[in-house]
Image 1 (cartoon, rainbow, N blue to C red):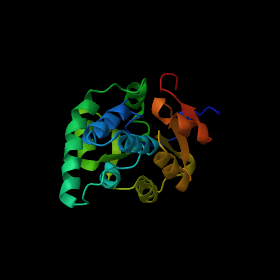
Image 2 (image 1 turned 135 degrees about the vertical axis):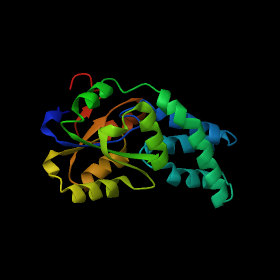
Image 3 (image 1 turned 90 degrees about the horizontal axis):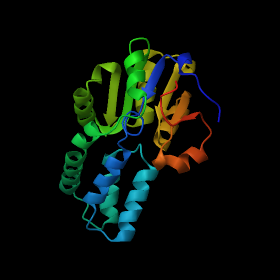
Image 4 (image 1 turned 90 degrees about the vertical axis):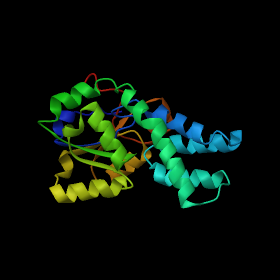
Length: 213
């Protein structure tokens, strides 16, 4: 796999879970708790779907998982599950480990490069998390769900008139990869235990951490 020199890029689109924080498993555990009343096959189906679609918003996942669980499709039930999910994950994400080297990288480069955050985490929730972590000011724009990643990237590119050759998306999911590809910018995959299948199926630069960049 070819290496990549981040010094060549001026505008960075960052995902959050699995790229800045080691928080992928926290979301997985939350889904396990929310749907713990389901039989093993349904729960496995839910967890596999979640892991294979890491960048997709819970606003899309939870209604689908409720349908798989044969629960009535009511907006108030979806809202309850969304609230319970949020309560399970916010503090756990804040307390989770940083991806190795990433804090130093963004600390050292946010003033010389332009950083955007594009995540499947709900807008209000990610802003709370970033504020608690004291890194909110690192990002020129923060976009959370329900906005779609590809549309968010396109909007920022057009508004800021970005040079596509100088823009890069650092993510860990297929939705991140597709957002970069559809907008014709470079993609860098951060690999971990939960996206091994993806890392084997796409051709792009890949890193496990930010210690040597």
